Image (tube, rainbow, N blue to C red; front, side, top):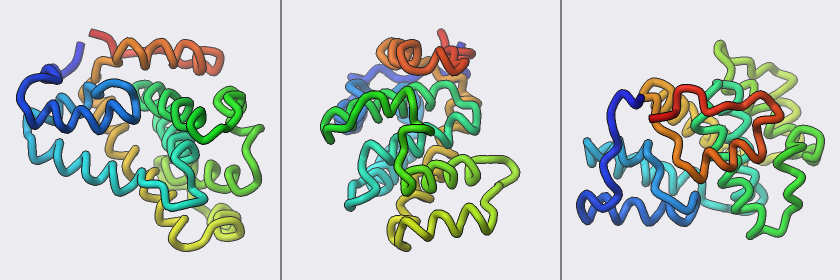
Length: 196
């Protein structure tokens, strides 16, 4: 059971407006943001941070950003965010024309540059942080400074979300549960505490 229940998406016009942004990414407003709406300034600030971090500036594609978030969330153990990121990666991958096998084979299907970004995401999301000189060197070999800022921004954004959703035991939405069961169960994923 969630620590704090989310507000309904039609609670007020501001909640409805913020929900539209996430409808593009996930196809529904996430319960995490609907819970944040109990303090609207927090939900607005989070949404603006999300827009800035997840904006596509080139080589760090929208799909790759979601896969970076997925690896960071898997490392942190946040089942809620694992399901959301795999869902969003699939949706953006379809738009970007990438092979859906990437979702099943994220580690083995990745290019060398993607592998460096995903290795960094795992290391950066670890507690304690495990970004070594070797991990940093591999990242720098494939990505420029601006791209490294984007990649680190994704890991940091999901650090916030991982703590938020695991602490709140945010209820996982039905479509995200279905995608978790489709793409992640074979790797040991379950809904865990994210049920009502």
